[in-house]
Length: 283
Image (tube, rainbow, N blue to C red; front, side, top):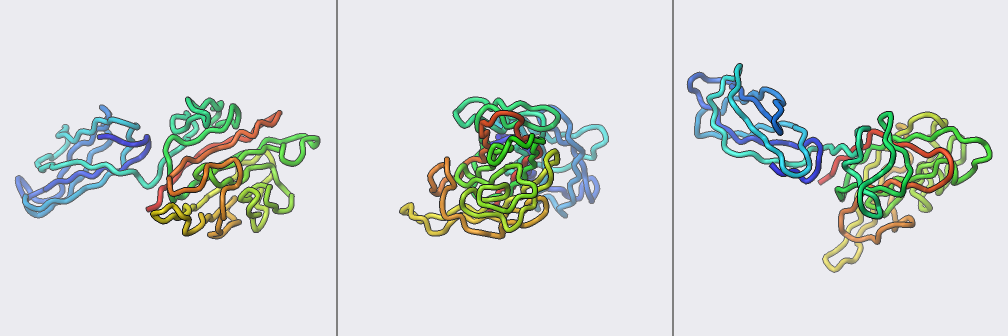
């Protein structure tokens, strides 16, 4: 089986399970890339001419994978297997705290942000996902270190989450400040958050972002602006708002799916960190 990206995928097995040598649920074992994943239970299809599809969520590597259903000790067997299909799982893990396999440098080549303690540090230039996305739900957790008072304004842990490399949701140490178009939670220089939901430095924060890409007609004319909902630390700070164009340092708007980009602002001193990043593509 070939998977476009690493992560959980839906594996569909078309099978029939008739009444011989007994009627009822039967079992086989599922192996992925040489490792037994589980014993799979296949419900009766009533007769041998009726087919059903059993779907299992399994981890696959990007590229080629070996998937085997076989009769193991403890399995009942006695089913007919027809074909396998694979589709992307509802959730794609972009960063699980261990490696940057899903990312690349914005300038090309491997992403080099330091990874330690289950998180990555914003250091070494912007990085972006290798996979590209249209509409999606995105979960990002981010952390601001404690800065001395002489570090002020946009130098206090500046980073950003770029949706399709076009629209930035600002990351910044903004605890206790008025909501603004260049503070944390903003659609940068476009829309201030409805409230400042920041927690204090030294704590982990979350963005849960639902994004609908801009729409274009067959001639390439934009027919609808991008829209976004941002839930920041459990508080909805943008509710299905329009974004009327790129927010700066962005790819041009068009109909193409594009990457998620994380910004390294390049400021001196301690840097923001990110962990537990996943995305759910939307149809």
